[in-house]
Amino acid sequence: MIRSAACALALSALVLPAFAGMDDFGPGTVVPNFGPYAPVEGVTLPADTHFKVMFDVSEAGPEDGVSRSLESPARFLNMNAAAGVPAENMKVAIVVHGGAWADLLTDEARGSANPNAPLIAELVAAGAVFDLCGQTAAAHDVTPDMLLPGVNIVLSAMTTRALLQQEGYTVN
Image (cartoon, rainbow, N blue to C red; front, top):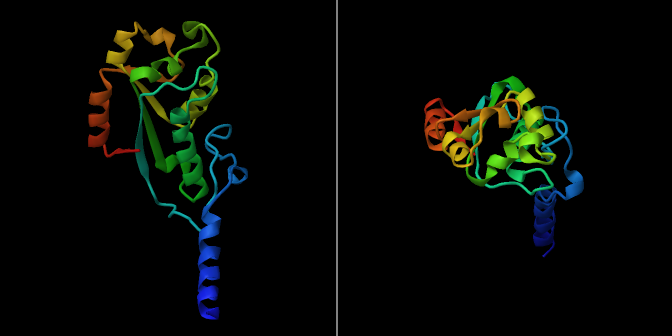
């Protein structure tokens, strides 16, 4: 009986730290104002780790808030840097299509302040690449001058995903 209780206590000591509350999430160093993450004690990655990761974003964020889908790449960069991967070893491509196109517009083109603009600026400064599907852009009459700095228009999201995978990018 005592042995079972001791085993249960030891197991709970291992499992409980995995349950992080919102207070455990904090800023990172690569994209400091976005992408909070919860450190996982004792977990590190080798410094020679390299990532090439593509994020596929098709759903628009809230009209008055930051898109969780666009914030995911920031979290990825921040948590992996904290785990030991140098920022220069991480390449991130964000392929945007569908309803998410409006999250990439300038304030002027949008007709109101874009809450995603500071996030996109920090991600671009961190080396992230933003590619807007040209088919989506054409469907919504979006021109390059309507987009935030650092956002490219590509032929299509489908083509870009295929090309990035040929370059060794994984899909996240």
